[in-house]
Amino acid sequence: MPDRLPLALRLYQFASFAVAPAAPHLLARRLQRGKEHPQRLAERRGEASRPRPDGPLIWVHGASVGEMLAVVPLIERLCGQNFAVLVTSGTVTSAALAEHRLPAGTMHQFIPLDAPRFVGRFLDHWRPDLALFVESDLWPNLIVESARRRVPMILVNGRLSERSYQRWRRVPAVIAALLSRFDLCLTQSAADAQRYGELGAPRVTMTGNLKLDVPAPPVDEAKLRQFKLAIGIRPAIAAASTHDGEEAAVIAAHRRLAAKNPALITIIAPRHPARGAAIADIAKGLGLAVGLRSRGEEPKQNTDVYIADTLGELGLVYRLTGIVFMGGSLIRHGGQNPIEAIRFGAAVVHGPHIWNFAEIYRALDAAGGAKLVPDKDALTDQLGDWLRNPATRNAAAAAAGKTVRELGGALDRTLAALDPYLMQLRLEQKAS
Image (cartoon, rainbow, N blue to C red; front, top):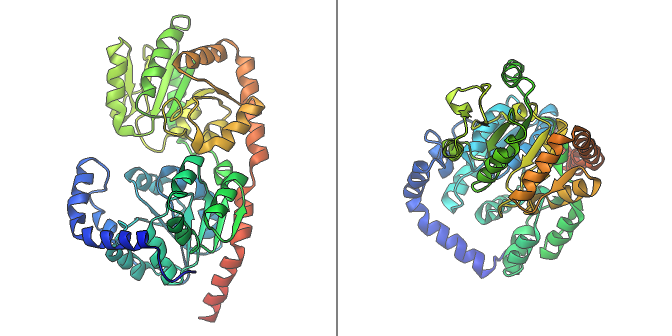
């Protein structure tokens, strides 16, 4: 591992040290925008809100909801081996998800701002024995300081899009200095492995995509029965993890399809639930009857569009319909994870912008397990086809399920790669 950092990283360290006193103002602005937890701001300054447990501690860091969901089964396995696990993330939604989905006993903290003072305070308290970074959230001070303290670092479920790869190639010394400090990089695909290797990661292994091994999301059975009774035999379509600009396309599709399917109900679960009211205004502006989950409203016989603007209830949405449009794909966001919807037997339709899950969608599309639509008109046509032809829809759902099963196994391969590090922690614990 090189001792001397490239100039760009040293300048970054100096700048982040210099601006640290402005952190309260930055956090206050983010709090006003709903991007910070009001009772947990101290964690962003590296101040722990709970004590460190005794014994070996494994630290798992993922940027947001998607990364956290991907490693829930891995965290469950680690906890099952009696390791204490600290999970960090950077978003309010991921913190809320942690309360519902992480195993009992797992600790969650917000990741500190990437300033030397805050990072040092965080590491002084937690003293992790092993650090697992999920996908590609690489904060320079966090990585450099962890390496200086000789914390073994492993990248799990590593992903690097062609776009990110080309950006990092502009600063090769910087990315090489960061990646060279990792003991091991475990990637989702062969293409990811090649990119990481070319950028300077010393040990790279393709283990597959952990998101393919994520179990179906939980659901409250009482709520499910209640919603099924409310919807009855009405045909239903869902739009999951949608972003600004996509809901209008879905609502327009509903209006066209309802001309021939007057009982149709469309369920929209936005990626950011706070946008629920704004989405409702779009539908109401077109004369549609709307229900909002966040207001405790239930679907009624005349409800056209139902907005599931709450956290942790996608499992409920997926169980109510066999047709799902996956958001983040009609706009230039990069797509959202289709695996959970497929696990519930849904036929999936998506737009062209799916680089975040390119390998998965490529396999699904090739097998006929998902349908690519280039624009909102094609989206309407595809949804209409599946409403008219249940056999075609069911065949697509079956092909998707088969593809996901065949691509699975990343969890076992990841654990096998981690096993030498876990064994070392056990030996150190016995010796102490």
